[in-house]
Image (tube, rainbow, N blue to C red; front, top):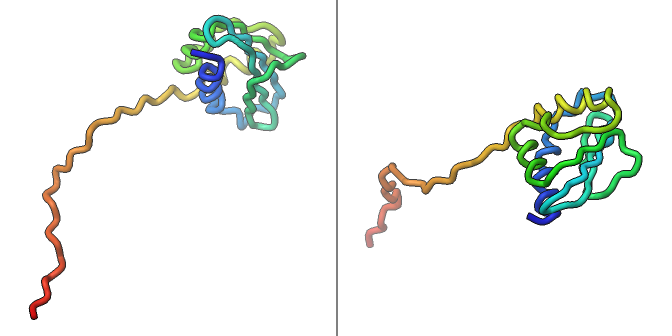
Length: 128
């Protein structure tokens, strides 16, 4: 997994976070190690979340994680297992938000079978 793939998966999960009622302004720097390493940030402001693939200097919270551990934590609603550093009050707001991200839905694709009999044509042939 490269950085773009890791960011796409993590960003997809973070963008589903319910932050509509959050009045705090929170900036989070994610420092990702391992395969797909790099940095990105999430900003919660005015009831919206903005996730960008950039380094954020002066953030409120830093999360340091291996790429697989980060993605797994966000996809399985176990983000509280991540390591958080920074403003304790904002961490206390962020952890429940991450823990409440809707679990990833895995859609099963099955071959469609048409159990209904074919419809007969309603057109009548014209007689000459």
